[in-house]
Structure formats: C-alpha cells, structure tokens
Length: 104
Image (cartoon, rainbow, N blue to C red; front, top):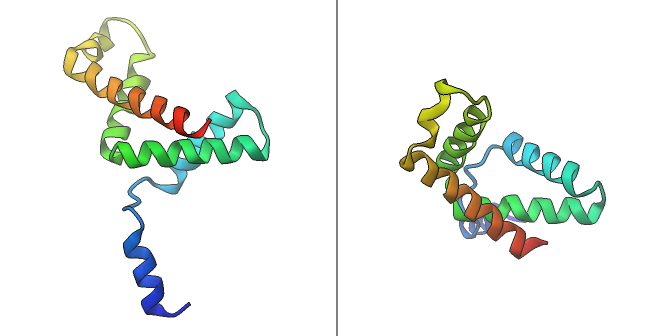
C-alpha cells in the first residue's frame, strides 16, 4: 500500500483516543464474564469499539474512576452519588448497553 493510500485509509477511520491497554482490559474482563472463545473475543472487541464510538475516552475514564471510587463504600465516597457524577456513570452504562446490543 502506498503512503498516500495509507493516509487516505487513516483519514477514513474514526479517531482512536482509547489507549490499547484500556481496550485490552475491557476485552479481558468481558471475556472473563462471557467465556473465553474466539467468538466472545470478537464480540467483546466489538463492544469496546462501539463504546469508543459513543463516548470520548476522557468521559469513559472519568466514569470508570467514579465507579472504582464508589466501590470502596462509606462516607468518604458519598460525593460520588451526586447527580452530576451519577449522570456520567449513566452515560457509560448507556454506551455499554449499546455495545452489547450491537455486538452480542
């Protein structure tokens, strides 16, 4: 493939702002829940791609952080239940559901 053809293909692709390690972590966790087959690998990969198409990485990272902090429980994390933070988590959940609907 020539350099100009490669550039044209790159321009047609959506921006990939999700780090590979984040995509891999998602696929690994998805496969742990759904099974470890080639078919599930493809479905889980499709799912994170759909999430990335819907939700910019910065919003994904913020929602994942809120979920992680919220899992600790107690008074120190009560702030994560504020409506503005819960809306960020809901955005992630909606993107995840859309990924599942399109890929599974």
